[in-house]
Amino acid sequence: MRIEFSWRIGLILTVTAITVFSSYSTFNAQREKLTEYFKQCTTTTPTDNYNAIRGWLYAWLLTASVISLKIVLGLIPLLPPFNHDMWASANNPASYSYHPLLRPLLLIELIGRTTLLSIASAMVIDFFNRRPHAPRIVIGFLVANLLFLMTEQLLLWKIMGQFNQFLLFGWKPFRNLEFVLATISCLVWIPYFLNSKRVKVIFSVHSHT
Image (tube, rainbow, N blue to C red; front, top):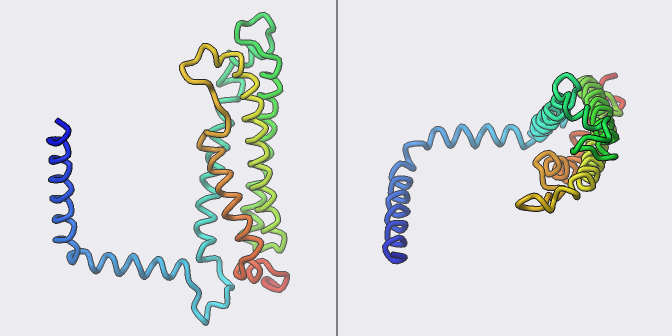
């Protein structure tokens, strides 16, 4: 059975390889256009002088949009009109799902996510206006988002601890997509905004004088 299965897998891979290599020359034009566009986004020409929002800053704008979207998607379900039962449990010690840390968690979620959205709005405005302090706001936003998510995960860890014995797999913090995205964003974008020559030129005091 195992030999037959391996034979089928080998046949599928062989057919796939033949198909890919036979059609490789068909997409030369598309590949060249894609390569040229990528070079335009990630390289600087001698006449560019680093004075335009382009290159990796496009990727940062995409990252900031995804982070902001995750913050909004995390905030809406926590609003009392959308999650009345959880708020009722947080304020009722007699409830079977009550935990003394549940109400602090909900309040931290509401205040933290609302504050992060406010910072994100100011960050976007200062970014496109090329304010000299915009990189510092970006770094502050990334650090604040990561610290907020760490606090959230630690509180959830404490709250979920009493339920782990009833779960098929024990709940473990720091594994959700939002936290992973925040961690990677800090590792990538904080060094970039601290060291990028383009960032220093675009957001310098003389760039818009």
